[in-house]
Image (cartoon, rainbow, N blue to C red; front, side, top):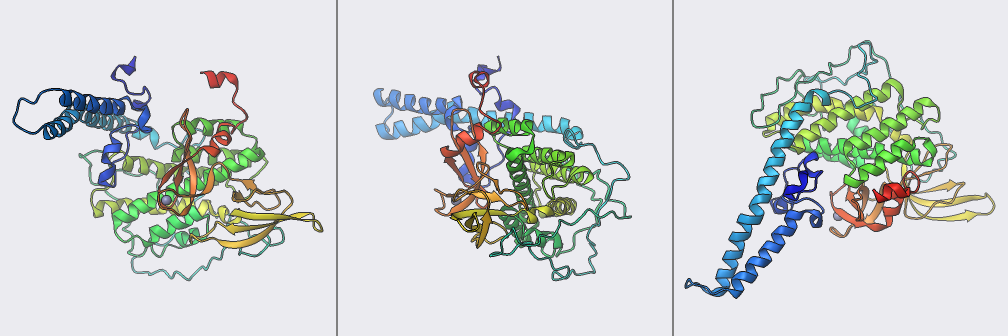
Length: 482
Ligand SMILES: [Zn+2]
């Protein structure tokens, strides 16, 4: 029984928590979340109480005052017998995980199950010129948002998503040299030309992404504003995460509305127990793409070769995030710049294939009323698109009633798709602002943990628990018992 040490049996199969960005988060990272389920956290508390009790009742043989004796004794003993074991456990887990991920790197380069590697004659896409002598004009190729506020979506023309354009130019080779994790990292010999200084700030693709759903748009803006390579590197990973969650949540809303893939929703529900990873969101997107290819298409969702290419890009970004999370973040600005050379085209490629998101906007409803004459619901909503945190108001009509204060995906000629419980708008207890959250976790016997796209703040919301548990129909009695 692997439980002799008292750790949850699955803790060793999960990546250890990433290195904290803030020093004061260090202590919490030593223990498993939620804290009350980590026996070592309990042991620390109980041990400290026992030490205090025994020192308080015992006689001090030294000359130092009793209160000092208790304080010093408790700190030293608790550190030695409770905190130190937690530190050792974390280090061992990091070591085990690093070894394991090193072993699995060759496999993890392969696309996720169901996605075959692109054939040699795979349709390629034009990559933006990266010539240092050419300064890009950001106003060229002006790209307007598909929908402006105060226009009813039922009556307007929505441009089609840009089609995949075959190009005679061969695609970049996808075999990418990566940094080995750990201190023995070999310097990467980059196969890519160095990025021009304005490659990120002047990127057309990122500028267009700033008209997408708010989570992506705000992350793209943060990336374009970042100055130092290390800052840009982390902002790029954040943007990739926002893209995966936005795509995945949109896909999940569509699958739930009758996309005909209960297995996908079952997978998502299971993933909620431990926390939905970027990889799981990508998997939900892949499932929706597969259904799209089969018939009941989600408008604009890439299918076939484009979907595969999108998944290859997303998987590449997940792999980089895992390296970063497991102790292989770039240590110098130069190393970050080298990785950005490789990652920026990958993120841009993914964003180009996700361009359809602009045509299926997210709205946050405020109120609605039934118009007897038109027999439609007139809804006042905010446009959860573009990078400004204060959403623009818009009016729309709907043939079906919509609940207030909920996010919906507007799909042309179809009923709006409800994004609850995946994406919600809630007041944040930490920063006292209303923020866009996504449901991140629903641990067994606990409540839903929401995570803010903008700040990373986490709050608990028990009103979503039932929605998540019922994702693919009510749980049968067998699965609740086991
Ligand atoms: Zn907050």
